[in-house]
Amino acid sequence: MNLYPAIDMLGGKAVRLVKGDFDAKKVYDEDPLSAANGWVAAGARYLHVVDLDGARDGAPVNLDHLRRIAGELNVPVQFGGGLRSLTAIEEVIEAGAERVILGTAAFTDPTLLEQALAEWPGRVLVSVDVRGGRVATAGWTETIDLTTEDVVARLWEQGASELVYTNVDRDGMLGGPDLEEVGRVARAVSGSFIYSGGIGELSDFEGLAGLKAASLTGVIVGKALYERRFTVAEAHAVLDD
Image (cartoon, rainbow, N blue to C red):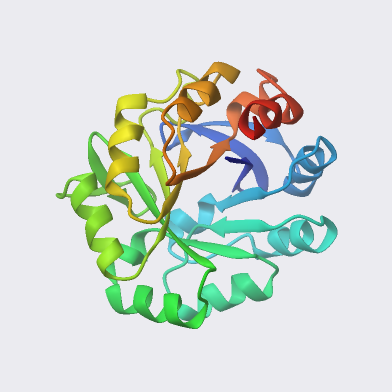
């Protein structure tokens, strides 16, 4: 599994939210590039960058920070937040993102998802963010009345083979993933997915690896790295093994 250190941008700073709550944030670095550089210097091979302002407002806000991160650091960057038009996706790719992550638009505009998958094959992921057992959209402020399994199946039918799955209720809580839940998602996913939500200890990686799920290809980690629960190198040692 690959490790994706997270840089969540809000108000031009690198922050972490608790359970997706914009009012419950902690600033970890005044400059997102500084945070990204720290992870790369520590050995990160990939970066997961989220424009929280964009997720809330419906269009990317922090493209300048993306350009700096992608332009100065020699690692692939996947970027999400506010990508609700082909123009926005194109702007993000031109700013240096290797892959883009569609959230709300993937559920509200199937035509956009289809066009994006056709225009940028292999570079479009869909974010399935779950809160209270239901898929959340619009910056985690609204939910869809479908089960996770139904949503995953529908996305597969539309051609989306790569997903990012986040348990928003666990995000920022450091309490570890619900392995039974992740196992259900792994069985439902026909392609591949990256897990996010609640990673707090190295043993959490061991638990995910113990699922032996071929569809689980990566883990996104934010707060645990910022809080120095473990290092990038220590995480790689477990995930690589």
